[in-house]
Length: 308
Image (tube, rainbow, N blue to C red; front, top):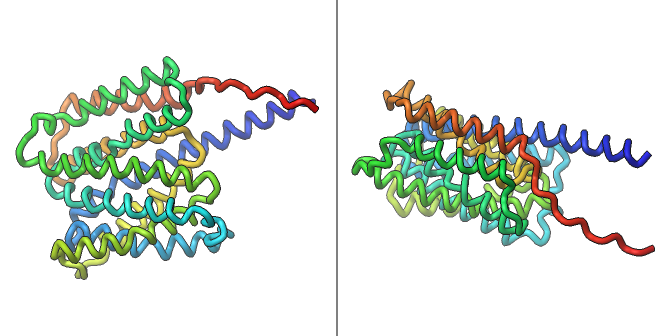
């Protein structure tokens, strides 16, 4: 009797994990087009980030209310967490969007996702466990793949260096954003959490764009609307959904799918050629994702049963 119940629970967890993993990959695919849309906008890079958030936030909050999300009550006790995540995300987008204009699309996406390794490290520290052997192999393959995807940028070409550093800063801030959002997702549904965090990012981005003297009002809204819907509503929405259901290691390694897709976009639209190293790096990342998906987690010691 108990064995059948445990089996049903295991199947349910596996099914939920599979859905979350599919959502994670789809979210990363949507986010990978973000740098392209940023380049297509006719406003400043930080202003583009402001519009991405400002156009998406009402949609996210409306969807949260339509799906029965308790926006205010579920955020009780998490005000500083959501505010902090919004400020970190604003810093991430501001530095990343500026960096996008000073490096290749693939580089911007790769460095902007430095959370690939920072967030899993945080997960291991919180769990106080070392990765399993298969997880370690996946991390190693992902690191080699990331280095290969970095390719010619690692030669520290002057035309890419500033952009790469700004995108690396963005990636570190992105990891901090993930850490705080993972905390919020322990008690909040994804849409209310993302909606409130996005709202907290709006004013910092607007003030930063004004301080930099950027053009704020666009003449062409299409890239900005596309950026808001595809990157923030769909991409971040799916990512935050998966954040509450998958381990930091899986979330982190899946981020490496973004530079692969961005490299293809850069090749098709900007002639940013792909080499053998790029292709090998993409294959290694794909293998790492398969390994980390099938790798069993290290078991945690069971707590002693309480006496009746």
